[in-house]
Image (tube, rainbow, N blue to C red):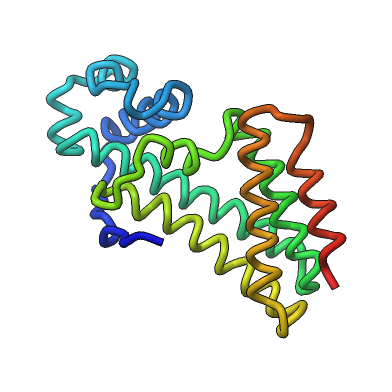
Length: 194
């Protein structure tokens, strides 16, 4: 694993900045980060290009805010599902896949925004790179905690396998390789759990 940049700085959102971020998020996800320029973001948000630069400073910072916001919303979404799953470790593992399926259907028809962003931002020096890799490291750590409750003697191996099932399902979903890959991954995960 490569070196990651320090956690990037974040900005305070004004109403105009929030509108710009919402427009950028939609455009980045639908068209790709490199394909979307600040002129288009400004036009879609109903703000001036000057307002964008005054609030964000650079397109890179808009990308940072987009990915950080998406990551925060995913973590909150998942936390609610894990809380609802209760204390049973098996149910909590399966709840991750259930949450992922619901999130993918509601928010990610083109696949995982972090995976998609990494296809365009693979340079560890880019300020958004640490958000992308940090989200995946966080997911692996979550699976490790859940696996430790189930099978302490093989927690690392189980966590990595669950992570591969999870991430593979996200990619298969985004590419529409076959119907409902997240449910398939969930069933494979269920078969692995002690």
